[in-house]
Length: 276
Image 1: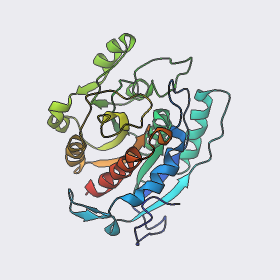
Image 2: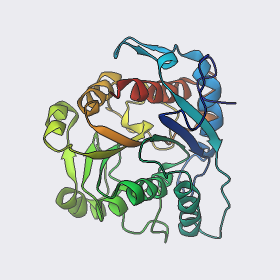
Image 3: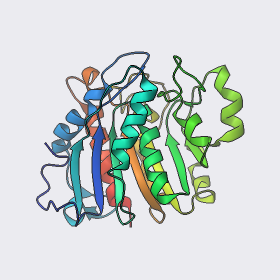
Image 4: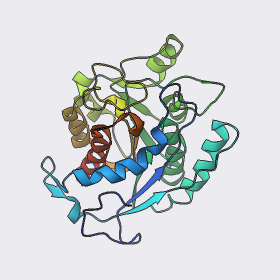
């Protein structure tokens, strides 16, 4: 099954501007396991949305993209080694500077190897983190590359911007406020001051208020609205967002509406159609 199966114009890998690949993996999630099922369900429920974007006045029918499906994840004895193996697989996919890459998780730990792969090609890449959580633990459950350490690991090597964080542990505070550009939802326009060049945009769906995305492992109240996301895309539309991911959808708790899976497919669609 491919993402957006209703689109009639489906091109080859060589002709496509966007390549889509999913990573069905979650490691060391502390509550409500199930995000490794997300790629399958997001693809399935993408049939519930339309191809045209009323916000960006474009249709998926006018875009060239190819869905590569899911990579095979070989599980190792711990999360860190699995993440390193995922990187090797993604690095074999991210090779062409003329393309843009869309990744579907999985939990947020998959962002680390996907970002590494993008950075290995584009070198200087700004990381933008849409999330309710700071994800700045140095070590979490004795693992260095966990879903709770994503922003910590990436900000150690690249300029990192976080939008929408509304909860963090005491142990994360010092690092987060000293090493990450933190943008409040009420001040999204300030993002314009920091974005230049190549960008990687990561969307943890708990960035949104639980009324929009209830099926997440760790929901936090008072989150973003869809209009916040559209505003971010509008700001980034004139930049080159070369990597993008959607993570932390948990289909096992999305029944019967599957509204979070549908939201995820909308996030991908609007990202593709926002780019110039």
